[in-house]
Image (cartoon, rainbow, N blue to C red):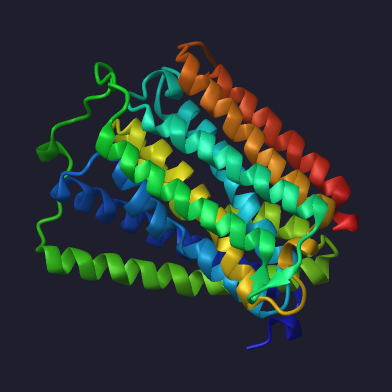
Length: 346
């Protein structure tokens, strides 16, 4: 179906409806993922990294792959970069909603600091690539091959860190409720797996609609595909992360919530390689220009603010959220304003 033949209000309505479906499926998915994590007995950081991050990245995969297939590389890349910054800002919002203490002051597992540092490094590579330019090689670009390899290396480092436990976590503030107070799914492992798969398929389908209509809305409204991808499409595809993060914080699982976001963001950087392989023409990072470089640096900056909070562990709040979370929101909104001024050059 060509959404370009529909009016702008009709496309906006489809976009909004698909976003709602993504949210509802994400709520169910969060419930199933939490049950799976408790049945496996794995640590919160590892579950957040491998299970939740992988599943909640499905909308980004659907939207970016679809946009790349439609020939809109900037929308695909900036959806991924926008999701990174948006999801860190999401943690800041959740901090103010679900806990009176600063979120970063109660996280017991130091693995999340390593995740944050790796996020920052990968995003800096993306920014460098967009500034210096990329050249095609083996179906993608030299820089995107390198970034993909670095992303795989980052995931390997995080799995090894979980095994080695180089730091001793402080679990005094994060115990969470007992398992019997949480898991209410009286289903077999097979049924749980099928329900999880069903929710994932729904998210993929709704993600396709979000990407397709988002691309048309960008053209019909004159917003521009780069800003549309960074702001609006990224918000819609971040809804599963929102539901997962809120569900985790309701259960007092602070490490899982942060690890979900930071793990998803590493996967988003790795997905640039997939986008580059699918998109036609030159290396995709050559098409995002200054807008893409600034978008990547905004993601790196807001992540840095959270890593500082994790290292400092100060329980100082403003408007019910940690000072670092407040700084993240200010930086994110300021970044949106800056990127809006750059949209014509994108």
